[in-house]
Amino acid sequence: MPPAHTDQLPALSVTQLVDLVNETLAFAYPSIVVEGEVSSFKINQGRYVFFDLKDDTNVINCFMMVYALKLPLEDGMKVRLTGTPKLGKFSKFSLTVKSYELAGEGHLRRAMELLKAKLTTEGLFDPARKRPLPQFPQTIGLITSSTSAAYADFCKILATRWGGLTIQLVDVTVQGQTAPDQIVTAIETFNHSPNPPDVLVIIRGGGSLEDLMAFSTEPVTRAVAASRTPTIVGVGHEIDFSLADYAADVRAATPTDAARIVVPDRHEVLAQISSLATRNTHSLHSLINLKRHQLDQSLLRLEHYLKLPRQRVQTAEVRLWHSLDILNRQRQSRLMQLNMQAARLSTIDRLITDYRRQLDHKTQLLAGYNPQAVLKRGYAIVRHHNKILTSARNLKPGDAIMIQLAEDQLSAEVTT
Image (tube, rainbow, N blue to C red; front, side):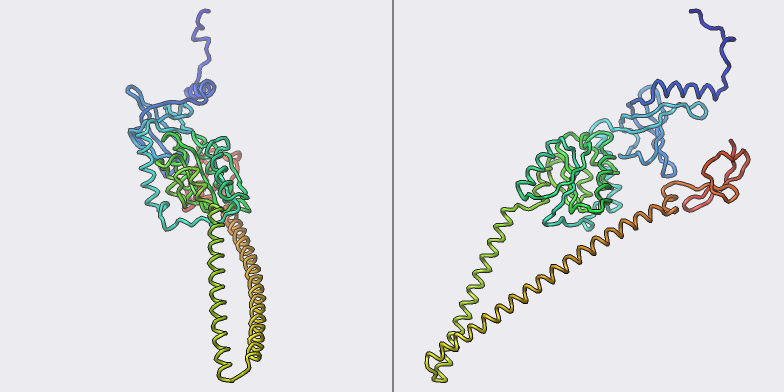
């Protein structure tokens, strides 16, 4: 087919040509994966991330939002990016990054070192902020993959050691680009539950450093540190360490070790109770024998000094033992009353704890509806003639608008 003459083609403006190219790119390459080396990395205004991705021949400008920066980047790191190609202003070709992975164990370890140093400075790993785990938990919140061997081993050991527990599982992906968001969502789900578990357990079996990297990302590490529920993290083998391990209240060497830490062995507990009961019984018998001996000595002295017949002494002994028996029953009755009062106080304490949790939850909800809190997350309120705008439909070029930020106001003029 002969080529069309140029006079038969419609003339496009520069903007139309850029739009046409972007439409073609969006249709043909809605998402692409590119590998290269990071250079000229920088963060603007604490919100926007800019860097170049280069190889031996070419360079691509890259852009992403700072919330997508789950692992630190720096010049020289090898990365694998997933993003959308686009022609921007001044026909500048760029890549909008959706997600990324670091290529190579050396770069992964370097990213972990950078993030660990940052979070250590913020105090996230401070031992003083770590809480003890409950000694006898009834409900366990478990975050892991339901198809993993780690999950099966954890449940098996848990049932063997204690049994009768309620396990609330949130099934997540434990490696790959989607894993960090799923783990963070699972932690938040447990913490916002009206009946949160007694302890939160996060586990994963062994793997390479890249496989375990989801547990060393910034969102996951911060979520573990911020958990309202005490946390125990058991990821990988004994020699493996993730940043979530440092942020957790307790670190377990392996998933099976987490099961051993979170609950005691019922056989050991029963043995301790039996031993304690035996010691108490021996102590009680010794005390009774001592008091009996003291009583016999007192009666003998009484018989000697008063010259009472032996029969009258024995009668007095029977009456004394009867009095002691009455006193003992009275003591037991009083002890039962005190135990009942203690049980009622324990119930009241649990009610107060529940009310406090409800109050904390409602306080967080109120804070979330605070307009100032929304502004501090990066949003803004736009006004025209002192009216809040929800649409630009009634604006025209030249109109003056006011932009309300969290701490300042900006004046602007509509141009298009």
